[in-house]
Image 1 (cartoon, rainbow, N blue to C red):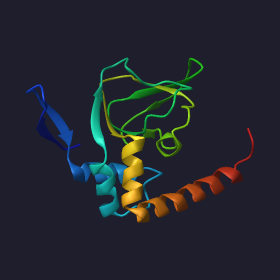
Image 2: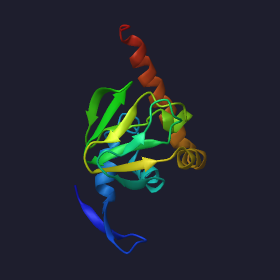
Image 3: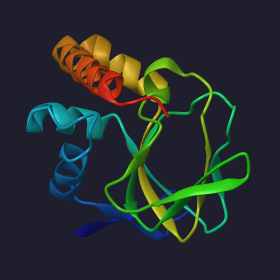
Length: 156
């Protein structure tokens, strides 16, 4: 991954992922994989890179959604009812549905290692969709395809 330096408000330099890498990673995400490069850049411009220390709880099961998060670097642990479900690494995401409906989280997510994520809060996402309805339409079509795919799966 390529990073560039960014000076933070505290005067310290913080690494920031370059846009080419972000476009590449976001284009492989199941929610955004049908968007054009121009659309992906708009999503990135509405997002913010955040860093979390190991052990930091990022989202809590049952709490309202706080947006979409794409793992850029490090790993995160997903748990439900205290039971470890999986580990997320670079290129994987959480909050795909919560960024749209703000509904309760189905699981908790914590930083396993130093974790850098690209985060898109719901209020930025909504503003993006209102300003660029073509993105909203593409996402609607994508969500419909994902729903059809889920309906084909046998019940658990």
